[in-house]
Length: 332
Ligand code: NAD
Ligand code: TDX
Image (cartoon, rainbow, N blue to C red; front, side, top):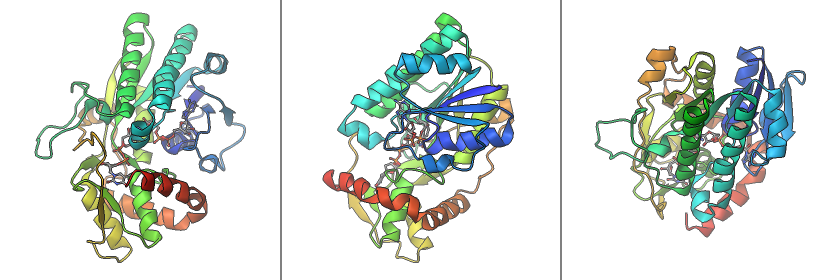
């Protein structure tokens, strides 16, 4: 791993792994990012210019992708349209980026014989009942619910087919819900934190009892690096940190942080097709690759994340009105 191409490296999780790779490897990192609304160049500030290069471009363009994959020895693929609610409004960019973009990268990796890591999500496995004792494992059936998760599931299937049919040296990771600095305001935790900062009430979809399995984005990055360094070619690894919480529990913790009443909540129109619960069994990654999360205390990680949003209002403030306008248009 001397030259790593990171797609989507100006996004929330992609930028985290760029910092992680610079701190924990000697590799040169090229970021390929289209700089969509979700990107943030600020998240890449302060990195050494002799080790990190940004190329602005689209992963679905073979002429852009080909030369960059040729120059790299390893491709780590984070770029995606990532927000479920947006995929319900307009699936078109999800199909293009998540499916055609992944296909374009796979073809380039095949042509040049490159190592490929595909970053995916636990949402490809659909959802669990609240009282189900099972958690997702690598053997759970694919059962995606939304245009977003279906496009990610389709991209996983493309990677698996390229491994089996063409011998591509690839791995896949399916991670649970990430939280931490630099997450776009459209996502649950940043939206609620900034709403409370602005003196408004958090907005919970439906009855608020849906459960997500939270992991700090630093731990997602260390898991991907463990897979790059020690993962078995052709394998899928589930990434999670035992952080199951209901949405109601999370907003109550946010309200408590700001000294507000825990009942200060608006229940709004539910997300169509809203997955009930995600839960990850990350035993294969932990026992097989000796990976362990650092942020195993979700409440502590959430407090630090809230404080980051309080301290970094200059970053999120210019984005806030547009996000809330689009939620208001959906009655959420
Ligand atoms: P994000 O939306 O914050 O960032 C996505 C990045 O990809 C942005 O910088 C954007 O500009 C870039 N991008 C989008 N379309 C592109 C294109 N066509 N060409 C080049 N770049 C493009 O997303 P994120 O939350 O950081 O998620 C990153 C990856 O991790 C995604 O593949 C997502 O499916 C996966 N994932 C996310 C989570 C989560 O909780 N956020 C959990 C599991 C897996
Ligand atoms: O205002 C809100 N109110 C609310 O109740 C928002 C924005 C969300 N929610 C709920 C919906 C979900 O149950 O909170 C939960 C989390 O919502 P999101 O942040 O939109 O995340 P989710 O749909 O779970 O998907 C996330 O995790 C898996 C990422 O966005 C995906 O990219 C990743 O694959």
